[in-house]
Length: 241
Image (cartoon, rainbow, N blue to C red; front, side, top):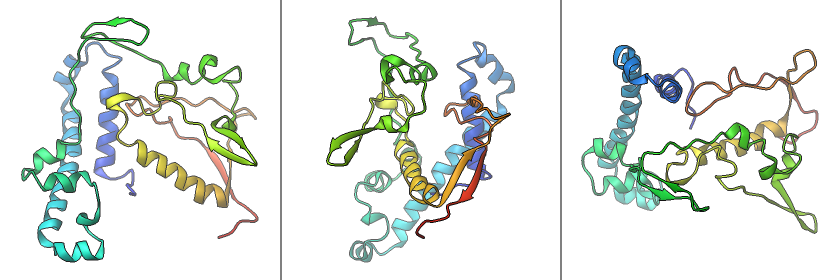
């Protein structure tokens, strides 16, 4: 799904992500949002409205379509086996409930870590992906080296397989019940980029005085790269269309 950054939803989502991310750094965020929180409330409203529109559109399509023809031809919502919105529409008529149904609401409760550490209810648990991504305990002695082949495992006879790391070693999408909802879409997009753009073009990072500058993360829940990654792009001389 293509979604230009200029769409109101995209702008609202980015703004809300940054504002919510500030809560982790500002202990007085409740006071701040009480006084200056109107832009955040408007952004959240835009995001919810976007979800409501999707559900309303799905309901209208279902009501106005020939269900038998959809099942026969394999198009429309009926053909999408396991589609969350479609299955919910079979049982729930209130689209406001449907639009929020994908969110898994959990309550904090006491638990015990695998190593026996007791964690009372209400405890604050922090982990630092920046440090975990450079941990030699997780990645080995060459943790600081850019070595993409670390993700591949030789299986003999020229065959390789993908090495999958636990979400608790490589928490780019978080882990557990609240793992990132967009994980699969992001992975599919990455595969699509590799299969199309990288096949046809060469990408070279733009260096500063001949040095690769470490990029910073933008303050946001999704931690996008601040200012992106400047690259020079050139078409490959030989590639199949």
